[in-house]
Image (cartoon, rainbow, N blue to C red; front, top):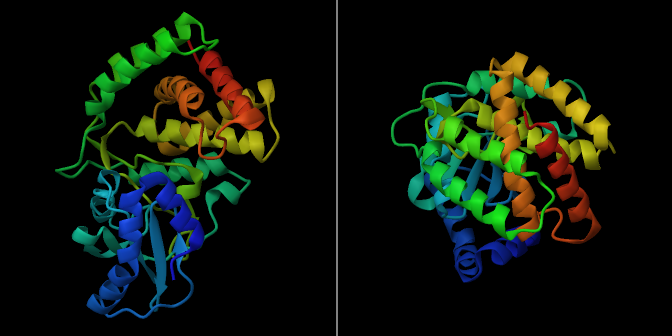
Length: 305
């Protein structure tokens, strides 16, 4: 019932806690199917942190690993009420489970035209006042500052001091005080799915109070990967394409382009240091990781004012 790839990924990430949860997962799914009077329709799918069970009625049952990062997903869906995101029909917070509107597995990451405009329009719809009770992204500011100083001092990296100093300035000037806005928190092309009610709908929010420009920057960070790996762009061509997409995204979303640039510069510096310490999910080491880190360095330097 549970896809083997999901089993392996969960055990690698969560260890013994993941094994224990996976052993209970089939029973959790059966209990929820009965609780909400659902009938499974099709094979079990999965993302990084949860399984998705298609059910009769164009809906899906999603059950996620019980992790703090998954707590506020239903709160975000509830606040959006289907505007730009899939609809939430039922929730069981104790089991980290939701009954959601079904979307198609095709993602915006596989799409080739007007990608930034589509994503920007969705972010415009998602930009609403945050409901009570969500964690604040501003609470991360001090830990981000500490990590930047530590990484800059300890890691062997080519980033000039001015690039790191600009990232620190973004933390101080944009991160410590942020708007009272609902933020997706993981806004990238693979979390934007084809749908029937609307052409595209968002899934997998983290649910924070913060700056919509952060979501825009996360989108551009992952776009850089797609443009490098998928389209083969590199160097100046890649930077020009990213700059153009930043403008398209800003126009469609209504988010200030300069604010997006500054957040993207910070996230590029953070990602450069993270890659050197830990690698990435799609590149743990070797030449691909070296290429990705070099690309991230170029963005961090080019987008420093």
